[in-house]
Amino acid sequence: MATKDPTAVERANLLNMAKLSIKGLIESALSFGRTLDSDYPPLQQFFVVMEHCLKHGLKVRKSFLSYNKTIWGPLELVEKLYPEAEEIGASVRDLPGLKTPLGRARAWLRLALMQKKMADYLRCLIIQRDLLSEFYEYHALMMEEEGAVIVGLLVGLNVIDANLCVKGEDLDSQVGVIDFSMYLKNEEDIGNKERNVQIAAILDQKNYVEELNRQLNTVSSLHSRVDSLEKSNTKLIEELAIAKNNIIKLQEENHQLRSENKLILMKTQQHLEVTKVDVEAELQTYKHSRQGLDDMYNEARRQLRDESQLRQDVENELAVQVSMKHEIELAMKLLEKDIHEKQDTLIGLRQQLEEVKAINIEMYQKLQGSEDGLKEKNEIIARLEEKTNKITAAMRQLEQRLQQAEKAQMEAEDEDKKYLQECQSKSDSLQKQISQKEKQLLQLETDLKIEKEWRQTLQEDLQKEKDALSHLRNETQQIITLKKEFLNLQDENQQLKKIYHEQEQALQELGNKLSESKLKIEDIKEANKALQGLVWLKDKEATHCKLCEKEFSLSKRKHHCRNCGEIFCNACSDNELPLPSSPKPVRVCDSCHALLIQSCSSNLP
Image (cartoon, rainbow, N blue to C red; front, side, top):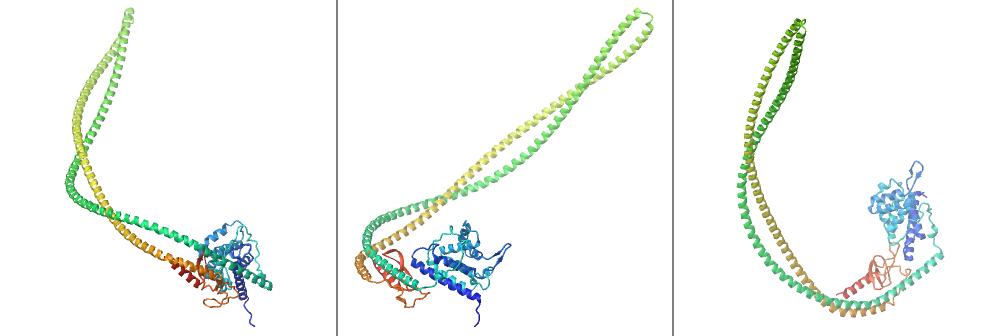
């Protein structure tokens, strides 16, 4: 006997366990007949089996403190591969009670089941085996064909509605142990299952009878619908008459608008021709006048430049003359100071002479009193006379100098007066020239202002004409839009006529078929009476599909038709229609589907 590979045996065991758990979960959920809670044992075992399948062949990741081996790593990859899974990842990370990666992975599996997208998410992972190789060994279940088979089995879980509370559940500390007792069958379990099947069949027959009673009640509702349809038909006839009157009024308005549009077009064309001629003439005159004005403006500019240069020269000369005048005034002030100083010295000398005279008088008196000292006094007098002579000579020289200084002062004053007179005459002449040139500048400025105003008026006229042209263009565009609207109104008128004819035909057909519907309602009543005798078949009695006659198996499951009660395969009963007993669409076989559609189409007009 050749020894089998232990990893292959493990994969086969996990695959079989997954099949059993998924099959048992689907069968129990269908018999249970409502949404599953987190306390439901088959659902808990399903999550344990899925956890073991995802853990098979995981690589051990080393860290500084311990060895890490969790399934949260590959599940996080789903966000990158499948963008719709980002919401699950974000909600799992936001959960407050989860602390370990294993708890996050368990919460992720529960949310994926509630979304009915677990098979889609895991299919994305299995396709990307290059990325999975970072987390799994080469012999892992997710890397082999068994993983693809499990993903295919997970598609059947989309039938189940699960309502799981993830927030209050302690997912970190749960122990994942598979309970094999749930999948081992005993004789008591088989008997209980048969009883449950019988009870379910009785309940289905009860529901079927209630649906038939509801169908009978719907006949009265059909009569009320017929009455409402007749009332709506009368309203539609009145609305059609009103619509006809509105169409006639619209046609008259369209004829009036056409005539008005033609008149407006004629007037606008004439006005455009007149404005074009006027604009061309004004443009020519404007061009000629603009050339003359440009020449005048250039000449005036040249004159202004020359006059400004002359004015600058005159101002420079005046500045030089003013500086010379200031220098002369300073020199005069210095001469006055010298004269005052010399007058002070003369006054001091005169005082000295008066003192000498007094001394001479005293000496003469002393000479009379004392004859002995006459000689000495005479000598002193001679000396004094010499001194006086020298002083008189100095006085004369000083007087001469004073006279010369006064003459120089008088001459300087005369020269200053002459120079000032010349400067005043020159300044007067320059001021006259400046005033004349300012007058010329004022005249030129007034001429330029007049020309500018004339240009502004011309520009305003041109802008007004441009505005008029734009207004006319807008009017032409409005006329074009009115034409388009008129054409649209014509199309709508034709469509309304078509709808009116169709509604008249529909009313005629409704009148013809209302009588037929009453007869068919009686036929439906008789058919319902006949259907009340039908029996809801048991699952054990049916081994082959009634239509295709193929044998039922795990892949080809059994389905009841909610109308006739027979058992069919999925391919022969994949139709859904709302029955009178249930407003929601219910599974129906192909033959009943065809009959119901024919009856509905015959009832409708």
